[in-house]
Image (cartoon, rainbow, N blue to C red; front, side, top):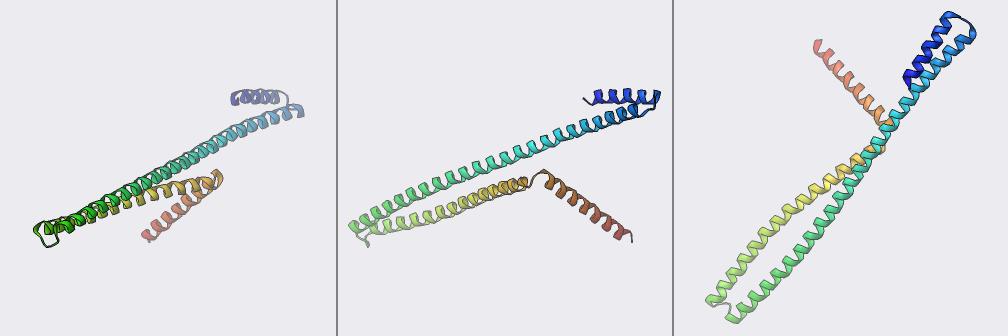
Length: 187
């Protein structure tokens, strides 16, 4: 595309060099304008590709966020079901121990041994609560990952021109900062 226009420019230039009249000059200007139009069209294609890439990245971030949220919901439901089942099992064990302690008598050796067993179960319950707290911290970490993905998606929503300008401003500010620091060290 560009090669064809360059050939046209060379031909128009050669004609103008042979005969420098207004018609040949206009033909040369038109050929040069055609080259600029082709360059603009190429730049338009590049811009479209960049916009498409940004859109795809935004879609990927949105999809990742959605998958993270689904995984988070699944983990929370699983944790709630496990907690409810554990609570029911513990209550059954306590009810059974209380019934056996009442049947054996609280002051008998069997009653005392069962009371100690009940206390050991309570200690085990406290250990399980500590483990559940650690799992909850893992869920909080997963939520923060989803929040990071949401932040990246909102940044992508700003769009190419604004992101490009922000990037240029940040680089310029960084260069100015470095220049100021280097000049202050020399002084």
